[in-house]
Length: 189
Image 1 (cartoon, rainbow, N blue to C red):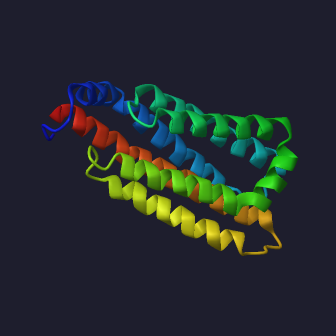
Image 2 (cartoon, rainbow, N blue to C red):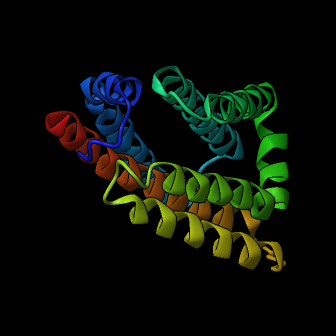
């Protein structure tokens, strides 16, 4: 680690590195969710709405954990955490309507997630030598957002399942890589 880090930054990195396993657990959980979603063939709309709600809740909780150990840009993690939790609660209240609404606004949701991942990649660039993984995932989500927004699908439920599965898979793989990078940073500091 470069000596240009302040003692506060080093302390924050040490705190975060002790929790590296949380990112690994989240990454594995996201990957399992992706596998479950991508195996659906004719699942009920209620089940899909509940899974989407659970994905939002878990993502919101993950943002709160990141905010609690982060020194900079805490407000951004808190903001996205509240947005994800709010979306999750709404999803649980009405899973059928959630499914239809998510299918209609899927492009916008992917754009929000993609922009957040790009910002996060650049924010961690100094301490994460694999920051580009998050950048690539963010750019892929942004491209997916514009492609999805311009499409009119007859069978939106299958497209929604595929894209939600891709989102969960990209989040899971990014978190797994991030876990080992955080662990490595903690060993260097």
